[in-house]
Amino acid sequence: MIPAPATPLSRDTTPPTPRLLLTVRDVAEQLGTGKDFVYARIADGSIPAIHIGSNLRPKTRVLPEDLSTYIRSRRVAA
Image 1: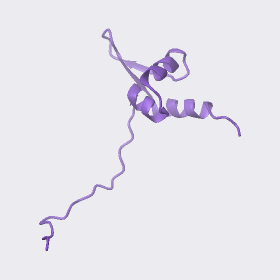
Image 2: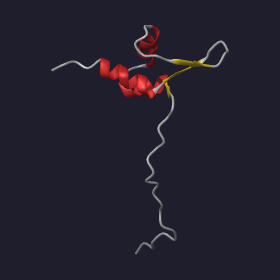
Image 3: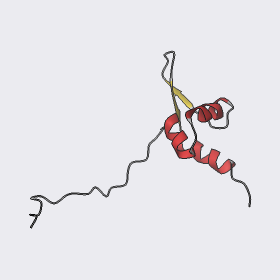
Image 4: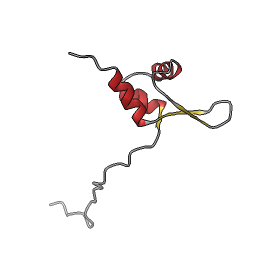
């Protein structure tokens, strides 16, 4: 017979905190595409982006609302 664990396993049922900004990788994963596709949509203005930092390679981030707007704009009527 296997003894019961000394302390019960706790399961955190708190929903994850929504992220304020998404990375390009996050956006690509949600769209099921590659990062190059996302960068191209940012470059053509389809997906608005925020550039953070003033160095030569600022970090690119996307607001979740802007991604949702892009997804809704791509819907095709059946």
